[in-house]
Length: 298
Length: 271
Image (tube, rainbow over all chains, first blue to last red):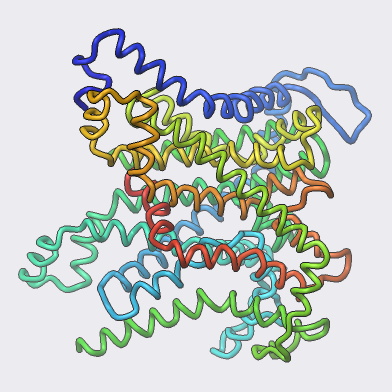
């Protein structure tokens, strides 16, 4: 940074720099202000009102009442639990498979780049489509997954009708789509592991198991935390796959915070309450990110 | 010993490939089946016939319109996000516009629960008559792509040696000329990667499209779930339309793999 934004520039030049930068950013800023921040502020105002589109009740200011109702709403806490399970189980599954795959394909071999491209395909597919494929693959009686389980002598799982299995089914479908992303990021990280360190450990007689746990993984840790953070943020927003495979059911078994806010807002048209729900979700998201970021900076 | 280890490695890679590709295979063969052939015990793994009837039916009904709408929305969102995004990103990368707070704002926008923004936008769009229009969906998609585009692009811009730009400034180029004639051409790979990404995001986007569309503007992600009737699902049509939706993206992904990899890893590795 010599000329740009430095002392070498005269004051008028720096002012012109600022003018230019502001001109460049203003279209983006305008869009973000008008279509994101303004609606967000408007949403907070709505969440302080009783606002029912489907019922003949007038719009009225109720203060924090919607938020108090959310805190006392057992369905909301159930949704928090389901969200937490999908995020944590999803992160564990995607990390385990993604990291494992990255280690498998890290070394050079013939056809490696073709295999990596094939493994990457799921991440490019629309989640709606993923949901529809898994809806059939996970079918209780006729789905191929239960057929394969039977072939290897395992009992069939009621993937979409047993409450816990339905959550597992969604974690599986979403994991299928996103483990390649974890693989790719970890692969990039593996390239920055210095070869000298690996060689030194080998010379000292470390087994590949020790090499992984004592050398590679600690070096990968920052990138692993970042990738978990990205996946956790995204999985907390997960909607399409759940909507298509179970619709939040059976009952409310797979109803995440997201699904619940959607249902209240767009099926029951309790606009005020749904807004309050979605802001509670935002608070929970920010707390989660802070906790994970705390680990990162330590 | 060594030989056995590598045999296990290739066995595991083989299993992973099967897991990755099986759902795609399942979609293809089920687009060839007909009512009564989908749910059988044991499941049918070999397609009973290979024809394109379901694809024709799809394209002649809602699928064709869906394909057109998806193309319009994803292309426009891509152009808007990358166009606005590269200007914003340059201000952030070279002139430190907004400093850390602005970057933080971009990150928080990525964390917003979809309903928290979709709900007030729905009311606003309703008042502005933007529901069920291309404009509405393109604007909404752009907002969710823009922070990501700015974030990725500012990383690419920072990789350009600043000396080149300074030399051009000293030689009498204007700041705008430096940006359009030097920075943009030099970061072409970054622009391709981000364009590809914003296109896929908008192409695959569901919840906003689902909430904001009625009958006039129906991208593929909205068309596919709409094929689920009250008591029947035309599975062959669902899967044919699904393949119509994913094959263009898969072809692009294979052609642009280098850029896909850069785009996917860049945010995480640099962040």
